[in-house]
Image 1 (cartoon, one colour):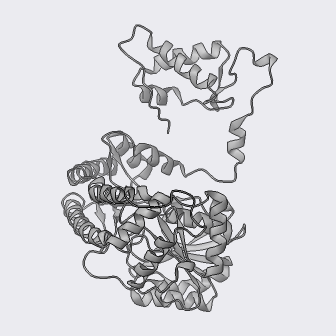
Image 2: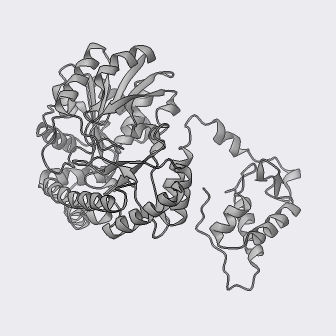
Image 3: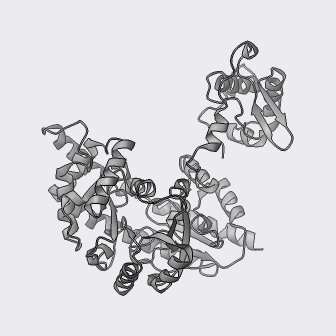
Length: 483
């Protein structure tokens, strides 16, 4: 999906095709579009720039005539030259070939489209998994940074495992949910996603298989696949991942570890029961299968406290526990943590130092203040109340417009409703038509290739009027495609 922040000036005396030609020339001569770069199709560029396709055709024809680009049937239009004196100088590197052979795989195409479309002005984001700007406590955040400005704090690099006062605060917080961990067994990371990256390169060898729920957020990422791993999904039921199948899958796939999101699972919203948590841990212990417990949604419960984390029952150091402030407080702080055996934490800390030399010290000091001041606990009460209102509003809206089009379960916390559409329609067409009408969706097939009739609906981000308007118009699109 091609996007650009440049637009031609339609009130200028310079013809539109000439403006586009100059824009592309500048991209090429500045080295932003290198030799081998594939230009967007004519229709795509015309739509993005708000001009007729014939205007783009004229611009491309001029660039072809000047020898800067070349169009071939079946392979599109590519940059083939960047300066007039190319023949008398050494050619520049073909960066396109470097990109193709890089070890880290690109995002799934749909995920790339979603990431880019999220910044389109006025788009209704029905699947975005983050707090609404209205739910992020900006005033309290300003107050905390103001307090930090009047304190003597360090602004340099912190020790490999992260700021000690923060690890002490997290150790105190973990006790409230049944996890007893010393600061030395805690590693501060830049969000739970970095934790997964460190685990993928630090603890697993190429060719390893990672077991996870089916569907799973992990399938929408390429973090493990890029490190040479395979993902294998285990079916879920209303209590969570089916622990009774773990032994079978572990044996068949020779799995190296299991990844789970037990609390308000992404994307299904499922809450794993206490019995299932214990059963899963028992099975993993019997199979000597390490377990990653991703618990970033834990504090977003609505009606009653959750079962204790799986980690709270772990007496053998089998579980690596991931937590974060990104879902409950602010994604911009980029603060998360890994809890595990000290040798593992020290190894991952060493890799993190090689990667970024530690998470932001300013963010870490801010997180210390959030925990120590009691602001975090107060904020959680407020955000739970607001998310519950949003959930109920979204469920009411779904009942109004989707009662005969879909089925779903009522989540008891977190961000998501896992919506299964009843009419058999093309999800790709639904995604494209909705996007053209200003509605951004998260199709289920990015979390599981077989989840073709599902959507991840989020009630955490979009304003309530946009949720109502977006779901109402989405129901009309579904009905149109179902005819």
